Figure 1 (cartoon, rainbow, N blue to C red):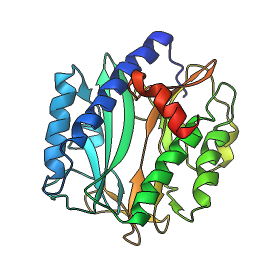
Figure 2: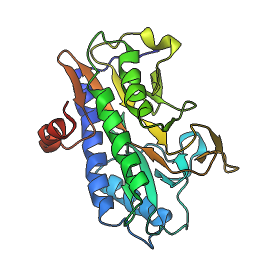
Figure 3: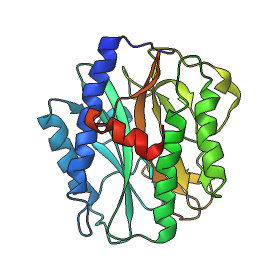
Length: 261
């Protein structure tokens, strides 16, 4: 079932999204060689709670932490641990923020120190694909316009597009209808409607698109050990197109210019 959100509900989701955007800026000060992903989780939970919200992932289907912290070949759902980050790593931080009964969902992949040129480009192209997809969001557009924007942009680089996991509706719950894959799909002819709120999240691998889940039951990794990148925004469908809810409002114009949306 697809839930249409009111203007008031969308603004409440934006409140959550501003907290997550502020959290990512805060985390950037700490992400460096030597810090553990468990420490990042503690910092994140403290920041979210201090902001008057709760981490929506914690306890969700038994998930034990406030953020997902996925390092290098870990695509998504990495459980924070005592693993220390090292120079050349990347860490994808995925966070759900809940406040006033509504939820936002966003992710950003951080570099730890200096990374290889191949990895640098992977991150740049994955984030670019996210904004290519966002630019296609508008009332009555087919979901495949959004999904296909990621597919078309990424395919030119020969990266692997993860197919087992995808974007989704969000707001009342962490995951709602509709599904929003990063490739065209059979059900993608469904149209977006004003008031829908979706999380768009390209998950792109430097190597094969194939993946598997570790024995912890959560962490999804690339089958060949290649690095993966993950970027995500929560976006509302409006009468004028799209509204990105997981950014700081004062940065919207700069983002539009940077990504030509």
